[in-house]
Image (cartoon, rainbow, N blue to C red):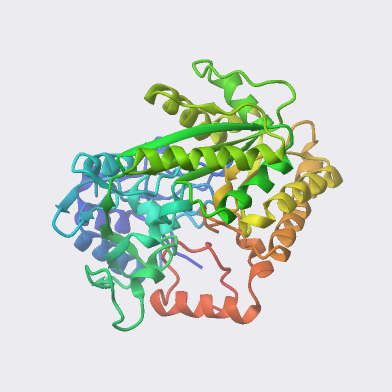
Length: 470
């Protein structure tokens, strides 16, 4: 379907960005062949690192002319294979787009390039007393552009929303090489179709984002953090919706079952937290705001509620060090599990009241197919990360049973009113399950949108929907 990158094309690419920013050596090909999605590798034929929208436009025009696939890449921290060059071709790295362009304190907005690390941007606005809330676990290494491409969330999403709630406007290079702005730098916009939101979460399949305008909010003065241990993981999940029904909206509410914490403590000896043997799950709950007395009252109310669900003594983080240690424990879960075993991670999401049913269902499906699962995630959003471990399964059992088990998990998720991904995206690995969440008519609409923006299917092909009928 696609042409290979020959010497002529390599020289044309070098003429666009300079010889120092085009690579074909084995080490670079290996580096840009993977992200954080399990152990998948797809080698690009060439890696290119532009630093201007006009350069990207020329690259895409060239790719259209020679019918070469182009895969946009950020920090490659994704978990759905969205940045994998599955058809080879050009890996287009955005790492040189690494500047914050303008912090507009008067209008509470920031304009940034996509290669800025998320935590760097967050810290830059905090210095001005402002807040950009979306905070994925990889915020210390992931790029803001990748967050926009995946519509990332994180713990703060339960109160403050996800990336889409903060994107006002985007500069995008279309697959044809045209450069457009998708909207306007305003809080309300009822002018035409909402192209901005179409690109948010489109995983680099419709265009390459080169500038991002984000809304900011004032930074809350105070926060309180508590770790609530439960004797039952199901009871911990039941407590979640009860807290919201009481009229409270924590700034974070994270679920970790016992195995998740055990893995973290095993691989991170600098975290010093004692867990009783009969504790099976924890909720990490944070409240924030500008009135400490109100926050204390909220914590007291939460304490009364969780006591109804078989919890043990609640740990309140009294210092910044203790808060950081608890958050480090939560953010290290995925990494610790990855060190333990070959694994497959699913990013399920259901209405939060259905979380107990989902958790029990996942365990039953695991027992049926012979795999162990470790569950954790953003309980306040109903977003449960299900990590399936290969453990003692043979390669044949892993290969044959796993797809059926995952499909059954997703079927349960759909029955509960949920969907396939809360924040990791569909990318390459979840694409086979899209027919569970969408009808053929809906999938055809997706394909037609893709075809409208990308007539020759050169931009990040093989992601979200298949190419059938394209």
